[in-house]
Image (cartoon, rainbow, N blue to C red; front, side, top):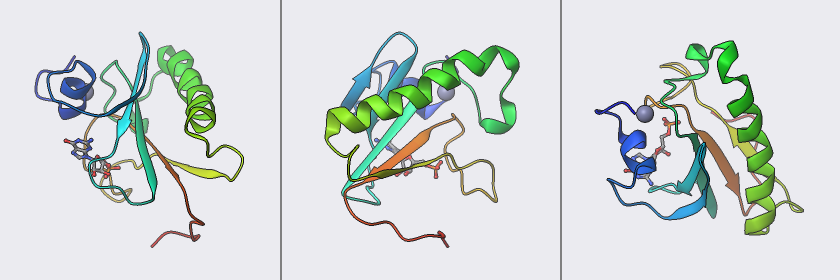
Length: 115
Ligand code: 5GP
Ligand code: ZN
């Protein structure tokens, strides 16, 4: 855990959040500023700053992250209608929190491409 990291603190329960999914390696919670009717953030509990910081050792948890996205989509009832998975990375990617997170967006038709 990175002591100064917002999402490490959220995963540890030190900062409150609305839990959507939790296991030993992953944590999912509702985004505080929803950009779609359903907006969930899914993170590895391990502090990984971004996709740009991934190492081979992280392959298993990132695979589980994607499979869990599917599981959450079913749990929350939007798997059939569809959803979008987004991982913003770095400054140009629009990343504002330095702990890798997958945005799960659903609940309405989302336009493409984003701005
Ligand atoms: P990014 O821009 O880094 O891809 O996404 C960061 C996301 O984290 C944003 O959608 C923002 O609304 C969300 N966020 C920032 N601070 C908090 C917080 O304290 N609690 C929750 N639940 N979401 C947060
Ligand atoms: Zn962190």
